[in-house]
Amino acid sequence: MSGIRVITESCVLLLVVALANAMFGNSDPGWLALNPTPYLLVPILIGMRYGTIPGLFSGIFAAAIMTCAGSFLGGGEVSRVVDDSAFTLLALPALGLLTGELHRAIFSRSRSLARRASELEGDVARLGADLALARESQGQLQEQLALHGAEFCSADSELHKLFDDDAGPLLPGTLDALSDLCDVGAAAFYLLGANKKLELEAAHGDPGRFPAVLEGDTAKIAMSALDEGKLVTCRSLWDGGKAARDIIAALPLSIGGDRWVLVIADMPFAAIHWQNFARIEVFCRWVAETEAAKADDAPVLAESELHERVELAARTVAEQGLPTTVVLFTAAAGLAGSPDQASLQAAVLPQLRAADVAGTVGRDGAHLAVLLPMGGAREAGRLVEAVGDGWSGESYVIRSADGAEEIWKALTDVR
Image 1 (cartoon, rainbow, N blue to C red):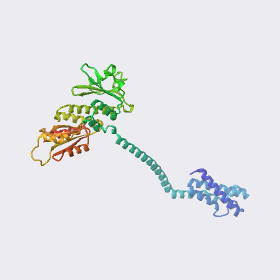
Image 2: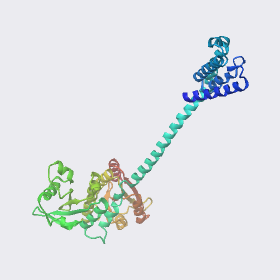
Image 3: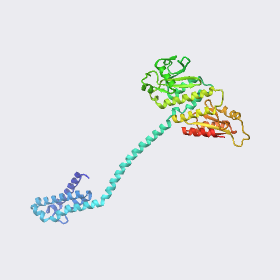
Image 4: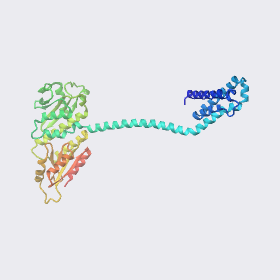
């Protein structure tokens, strides 16, 4: 409610009544002799429209106008006009006050509801904006979750490519795979020779960045990684006060009796973070373990060796969220006799992919467990179907470190 608006409407109403007074009752200025006087319309209308205070004000204003009109236009004194028309003049503000209270009684609840409705509309508008923002954020979150680790989801297929029959040399292929999976721009494998020198075996990226024999500060950092037996990054080198201008990270590897070190010299800035280094380390561990298994003449791993692969699978799922599946093969129910281990291996081993490994498990060691590195239910189903109906295949998916221990206990306790 605006005070200027109340004053304006009061003046307009008084002007209308005054014009009517001049036209139809010019002999009675202010219509003091008329009962009821038309000037009562002013406080009634204003009070009913705007409430108590505006109604009281308009009544006082109308009484003042009537007094002035009766005094100056009627030729009488003000005090006499007031005495002669006291009841009428008092009735004007009283009627404005009364109609204002009537207005409050009638419209207060509706105005309260209207005010509350307005507040609720504001709340709904804000909630609508918040909901739109939440939906947008949810969409972005779902997109990020869907793409989380997507660049490393093909690690299992890259691992199998390295060990296919038509695959090229292992080390250059590993560097190419790291370039695709982890965005490694320039890296090289160095072999620790008998003379304690690091000799270049394979390089990826700018060939001029890697000398045939690693020397200087870079060689010290690479040897530090070999001595510590863990990944050394530029962050730890800076913290240790060592110079590392030509190296981002160094990762030691052991394949057979040889000791290697992966030297990473170039990566995009966005790819230099701990999760990506963990991907590099996990993939290289799988390559080393798979190469060690392939180098062994035995087609089937011993139980202890298979357990090491299960532990690596648990680490992979813990660090990268990539589960590994183990398929346990036993004699199918109803098969006569107790087939020997050779028959079981003859049915299963030809169906394995390049990087899949099998090992004997069970209390009598007569059962066969196949570990599918970073493989899921689809690969397990393909393998069980390929082996055939003569054998029963049960899949176990390693989804956590605790789950890996439970699965291993179930594999070793099978009869």
